Length: 532
Image (cartoon, rainbow, N blue to C red; front, side, top):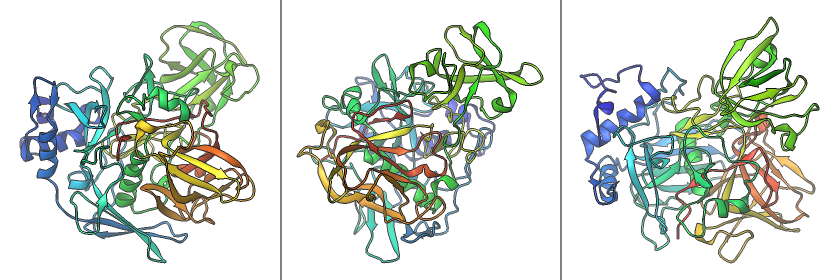
């Protein structure tokens, strides 16, 4: 699978050559180490795919059989303790464009990733059509969807201690460890490897995609719409799974040893700007606004413009009827007090003084040039998305977890139901869903709660306990309807662009119905929805 592009990433002595285009150094080095030195991926000319047997052999050749753990305090403390083989491994230093992350986990068996093109069969079996660096791979969708390939892991989640939760993973079936969530295919066989969507969901030509450089799918995305949009009942695909969510949370806890995800990666969570056009233009592809505001709009971010002369919610039609979700390509000074912001418009438009320009969730691919975990220029300013293990997150919208439903009978609270097999995805809880016996925090009335520590709801990692804050416990807010309310709710993760310190990996928006959709709600494609 290696080609000249991978070789170009390395000096003759084996050191990484810098700088390298497209932020590929770390992944290409991993490809070099795994593909060239460890095993050979086998290309099947008849299927135009790499054989799954050779991918499994590649992963097995570098499996280290070690148990990597972390102790997570059940109280208000946020710092965790690395245990087992994880002890002593330095916490990664995240990167920005031009400065690669320093990550000593990259080549360790359970943490290995490859960026690939591929997909999933109707029965849930994954396949790979290209590996980054092989001359076939593309991020723009021209060679299929983009995934992060990882080993199928084993794990232990032990809550028996009164003081801490013990989380342990391995690439090997060690004593006491169980297969990770969604590890087993519907027939009971083990999935050969895992594919996680690199990008948030976009809809291209009516098809759900994980590709770079696209506006995210929003406004019409809800728990129930994902069933049709991702063709969950008739294919191996689905909306975001709790197994996708599990992987990011697990990797973050093990690598960074903190419950406070926003202390490392804020995401687009403090970027709620609505500002008026200051200079009108006709037939343009730019907007002119006050420089004081323009300074807070990063290149690469996304905007919407409406014909509204009064500030409105971004759901209103006149808040985005000029353009919606266009990407900022450059900025230049217009005069002493104004700045022109150019966007990637396919057609020219007109602007009117006094109408409102608003920030929007970022397009996919903003972190493509980031090497390893990190953000384009600043991971904690609240204005930029981030990557963990190659997965781009925190674009400024909630991501619905499609195989989870919250349900309340009006007396016992909001119980978490999960669906093992996406083929059975439904617009309401059915007999195919599992009642986990775990509940999202709630009280007498609609309110936000701050859980203290993680718990497992049938493999879905959720917050437990209450009484924390934005800087203690899990640090992220769970919003719930009152316990006496009856009905079913969708599970929205990560947080929107105005949620600030309430957002993060453990955030939950749990007060929206299963058909609720809006400009700040999206999801992502999943290749791991089908399972037994």
